[in-house]
Image (cartoon, rainbow, N blue to C red; front, side):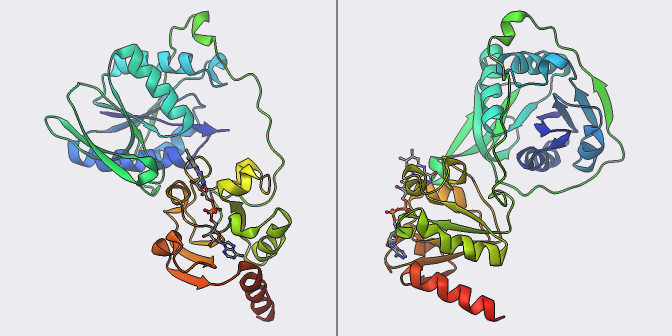
Length: 318
Ligand SMILES: Cc1cc2nc3c(=O)[nH]c(=O)nc-3n(C[C@H](O)[C@H](O)[C@H](O)COP(=O)(O)OP(=O)(O)OC[C@H]3O[C@@H](n4cnc5c(N)ncnc54)[C@H](O)[C@@H]3O)c2cc1C
């Protein structure tokens, strides 16, 4: 059996978890296993999990565990895996997913393979994991009864493939006060400033070439017309031209829009790590040798402060 750890917000699994369930199905097709899921969440999750191929949902509903507590969550997962003895415990490669799985590995004295993008199951597990923001692929061979894996985000698309039913089975872990040494006490939501970079179908990115925070006004205007989200490279967030949460790249948002319009961005590997899953990339850059052009579907060589207003003008005519 393959056990998937699912993260959710208010009973709605996040995209990375849905991708993880879709990846688990590909794995299950190789091994002939069923897919079960575990979440620190409500029974109602079962309806959604069923649509993603989960036949049994282990629901941990202890109030103490609603807020993220890494060690307590890891101990809970370890106790459940001891009980169920799955072949694989698979988690999304999110901050929480990676952290919890590192603890599970330490508690079980097993190795954890993070950032997985491909698995061949057989007598031993042959795993490919992505490093350096997708610039390097490592082949890993593990020989242990339980494979502890986290999936690199955006490795697969989240797709439904419903099974007939998903049974909900409550699980109550045995926890001690010491397992709650670190726990989230409160969450402050940021003010919603437009569309989410992660889900917007069109994203406009600005880099050093934008020149200043005020320089982004023209990208914002284009964003409004195209109903696109606007983000920036790390240079722009470091300079305070954009908020940090609007950074695109390895240490920022990983985006996968239908169209990414990159303006005044050179295409450093760390930036590309966050936008390489865009369906189409349009680059506007003054330098015809900018590395980002080798990833572009379309390139316009020129000053973004001339090109973007010209695009806006044309769009306003239509
Ligand atoms: C550990 C680590 C993590 C990192 N994480 C990230 C990350 O998450 N995201 C990220 O973006 N970077 C990240 N970086 C930084 C990254 O290495 C680059 O420094 C950064 O992406 C460069 O940003 P840029 O393309 O805006 O600037 P530059 O590399 O300076 O490129 C500016 C580009 O703008 C063009 N240009 C200039 N003027 C104009 C104009 N008027 N019109 C059109 N084009 C113009 C230039 O030709 C050039 O190609 C990280 C670095 C490290 C070490």
